[in-house]
Length: 204
Image (cartoon, rainbow, N blue to C red; front, side):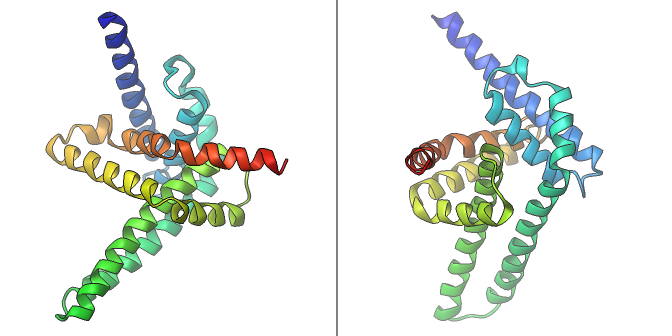
């Protein structure tokens, strides 16, 4: 019993490490600037397809997905980056002004940044999980984020904890941080994806 539990644990750790190394490899193939977005999308798709079946997660399939995801992955990534940077710049300006009204604005901007990050995670997951057009993908991602505040909190808190642990153990940047964030987002939104599947079946 203990041996089986340890085997399962080691398999999960190996999948996390493997996906994270794939992420950095593919990101470097795009010279980081053009590689991070499609690499994130590729890691999502590999995990969604195979979960913890580590033998099925191959470099060959990952490279094929990376090439397929190149344009769309970059589009989604940089759209999210632009929105978050705009919010961050406004937050930078706002915190320099004192007053209750601006304090409330600060909180709203921080929440908007968190919302933007979680929405981006939803776009990655939904785009990897369903065959869907870009316009409908963005609509579904916004609806998904707003429809279940608990899931939003779960993703946000999970990402924060992973980043906190990474801050204390820098080696995770290479071996686990990115893949853990993607796997956690996948796990946290499982109930919502099941709800979407049920609604799609009703309208099929």
